[in-house]
Amino acid sequence: MRKGLFWLLAVAITLASAVYQRMTGPTHSLRARAVVSGTEVKARLPRSAETLADAELSVTAPAPVAGRLEWKRFKTDDDWTSADLAREGDRLVGRLPRQPAAGKLMYKVVLTENGESKTLTGDVPAVLRFKDPVPAWVIIPHILVMFTGMLLSTAAGLAALDRKRDPRRLTIWTVTLIFLGGFVLGPLVQKFAFGVAWTGFPFGTDLTDNKTLIAFLFWVVALVAGRKGKPARPFVMAASLVTLIIFLIPHSLLGSEYNYSRME
Image (cartoon, rainbow, N blue to C red; front, side, top):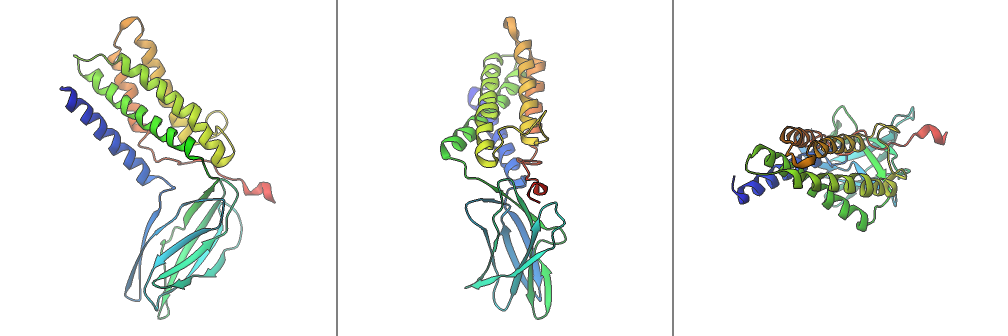
């Protein structure tokens, strides 16, 4: 495979997996739609907010459509709280009360017109998680390093398939970048956002932390198998495939979650 095509394919696969992971993640805005009394309303509802202020949401809906916002703390026996949405031009605007870092709220947007009501989120409420602000000097390098690590992981797997290429150098770089992005910068991001650096094994079930750990271990095995000048192609292909599969798992799934029972 020619060098240009080789890297084009690696970049395409990596970009596709990164976009899929982002779009399917539980913090990506939720696309919602409802038809109330013949009026179609579409919205993108937030599922992530910072602890600096209440979380604002807005729904573009023509008059005379009215609405209300209902919410409760996630995984609690709280009663639902309800507040009318305020009309600002062609928008209905509401606010959800800010929570501690990693705190979550379940919420529903109920639209009403001519006595008919429809829930914009359907039968399942949306869930919004709060986080503390993360400095740009941490989050930007973390994203860049992890993306580059995923790119080189893909490239190493493609190189392992090509008998004319030696994947060892790519393997070394992949191990280095996954370690730096996942075990140095990643915990810093977690610490700033939620106050805890690591919530994966053996301390918790954070899927992002755990899948990074699994990928790293597979690459360490591939690196060890390639010592003494061996290309270790089966090990590199396995590590690359495992990394691709686990990074298709939505980001922040089973992530940090505030335990409200501590507040009682």
